[in-house]
Image 1: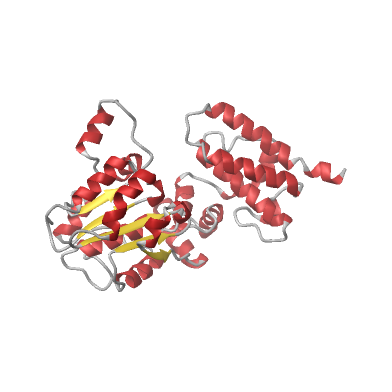
Image 2 (image 1 turned 90 degrees about the vertical axis):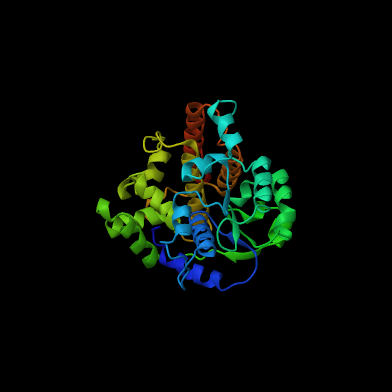
Length: 340
């Protein structure tokens, strides 16, 4: 049987199951459970004995989804994510990767979109519905999105779509306009903390530890769970801004570049919020360094946004880390120039 949904996702599932329409778009910031909710919807639509709370979790259809073999469910994802989540790749794509002719794609390839369109034209294997799950939908490039567009607008037979995204603004307007958009709901802090502690019960997590993970994630539960898995401790997170101001990169040194960059963006956000008189979101406000000059913060924010567009490229991680460390220390020291 599949794992139970978080309570705030279960509430949303109940609402969405009452809606009509063949295409749903689940949209919101990362870490709010878009994938889990999308899969729960697909599971319920395909379930042989669905109930008021969703799929039964015990029938042949539910089992087939659990083992990633359901013939009436197409999971349209980047190849890297399909491998991570256990979804099988197309036989041709898998052979190319196995033969090392290319690396798994981080985007949803146009060939995969064509396979999804062909999937809608096959006879149903079970029940009365076929489902295409697209996640993360913003990973479709223009070619793959346009390939899916006609089928999304006028599917053949009983086909339902659920698209999930962390960046709805990156989707083609024509894709968004053909879907009913659902804005993901943020859980309240108490609800998220209870869920985090339940997920980390085997590790003996305390509520205070869970609160640190949730703060580091900006209130996003899935991201908080990832912080918990990383072993992040409260004192280390609280002291990180002052450590970076001293040029101490020790805590971040073993993290992947994308995670390092995300931390710098969070620190920049909190410093800009502090300068504007708004509350900090990611770090304890009492542990933030003196606020740098606004111009320095604004320039740093633009630099970090530019870096995010290429952070997955195979640059030298060591050199990039040194540059980020030096730049961070320079920005955080700019407060001295303002007082001079």
